[in-house]
Length: 172
Image (tube, rainbow, N blue to C red; front, side):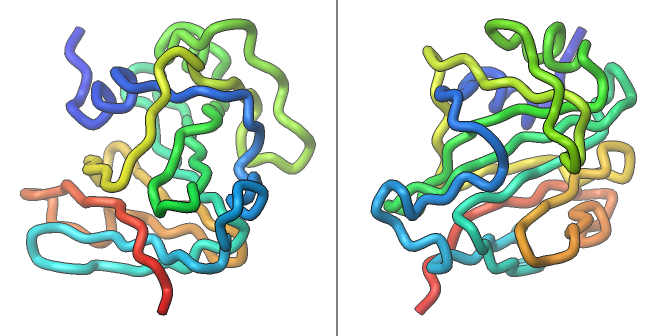
């Protein structure tokens, strides 16, 4: 079975740490969590800019194999990179089979968007300064940040060129 390039990129670099939920703040690492904006762009320029309050953000998508929603949760590091700290999904099989997380996933806390959570493989940390993802109608990739409504990435691009880049920009 062939996986999309964006998925292979994340799977090939799965991140470490049982650092927990999407609300983990970079402030605990010496960073200023209010100092960043998530810029979403493509070859045509900036499509959207979302303030990142709390030092973390998440990207959800409809998993193409299971048809259910999965989520990758990132923590902002003081240098402006971001680290995958948690995986979450509505369907347990997405975590166990698709992501092949080490250890058993846990039930999500009440109020979480997803049903199950798991830490990525700590032996394969995934830190990014820029990440290109497919923003297709089928995948319904969406950015989630504290204090802002979800941003549906697939509505920002043309179906003929659905890729966007996620990059943090320091607020001035």
